[in-house]
Image (spheres, one colour):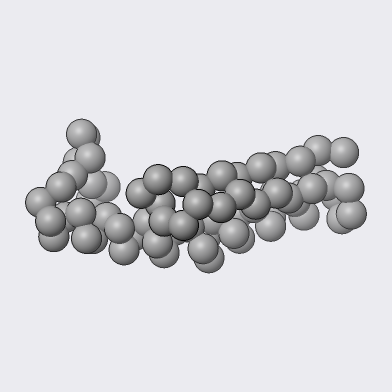
Amino acid sequence: MGIIRISVTGSFGAERTKIFAADEYGHAHAVAEAIQFLADDVLPEAINNDHQCRTDGERPSKGFIK
């Protein structure tokens, strides 16, 4: 059965790795759990980080998404 491994490091906040496996509830469930983790835990931190970067005058090389 498959595994999805997501590692969050650097400016994304606290370093952590989450593993989502298909062996208990199937592949679609593992993907759904991974998406939920990204949406609930990583995305809010990323949004806050981008706002802080903009306030500090920092920006990605191609700018922020409008």
